[in-house]
Length: 173
Image (cartoon, rainbow, N blue to C red):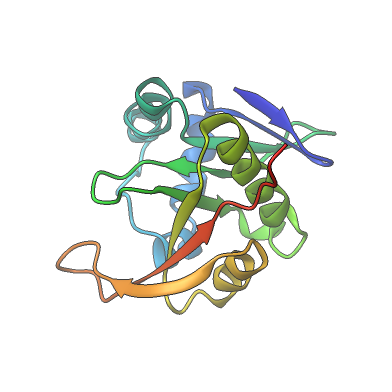
């Protein structure tokens, strides 16, 4: 899978992206606002890719995609659709390296992913999970048409995660 926006290319992750994943998953902001995935080596990053995004492409036909700049092919983040067993709806997920924040890249990538989900997968509803204190992510979700639904606990150690919902926005053709 590969698709482009005005400035970005979104594509399937490969195991060659392990160094990038190692860096992204160990960014303090990723650990604070998303989770500590415990990925500390290149081998663990490779396993994360194989058992996460790559397995999701095979199982569900979608997953988290590598987001790179079109002009340089530099990897700047990930964005995609995640199927979690505990939810009926597909979850929009994204994370970007801090030096690429506040440039509109997350909005551009997430908009493309949502359009892909609606057009290609027939999604009429999408959810998003966010740390209640991640105001930048909450503002992005609101720009994308998501509305706060409720607070949930992902596991016993979770202090609380905000669940946002978005109904499909495509007009009939």
